[in-house]
Image (cartoon, rainbow, N blue to C red; front, side, top):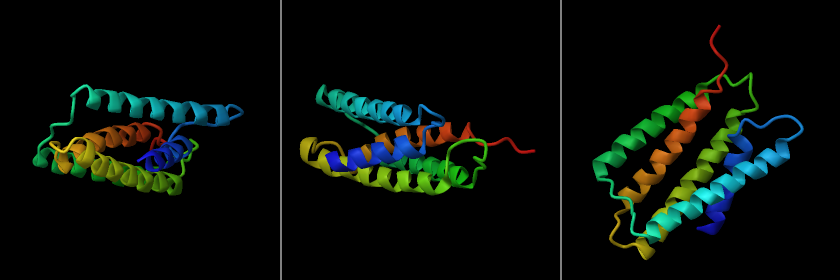
Length: 141
């Protein structure tokens, strides 16, 4: 779980933050720290009993939304920003590994929570990140 999380946080911080200029390294570190805090906050919520309770059909809808948004992101024109589609694809693959690590961890630590609830929870969060990326695309002329 830890290695999957760190790999995703690094990929996300490098590829999906609008981070350019002389502060780039500091901004990458800041983005990674924000992801780590989010991880710890989620774990704290789960330990407090606030576990994901999504239904299977909710996961299917969220997954379809994620796929549609991801499709828009990889086709977007980010020429006015620091984003590169190839790096976003790497971050997406790292996120899938991270999500699946949560599913495996959840099955052991919180066996009453079904896999689709874990997937829905993290898919919803990932789709929001991808949606935000779309706000950086270069406007059509």
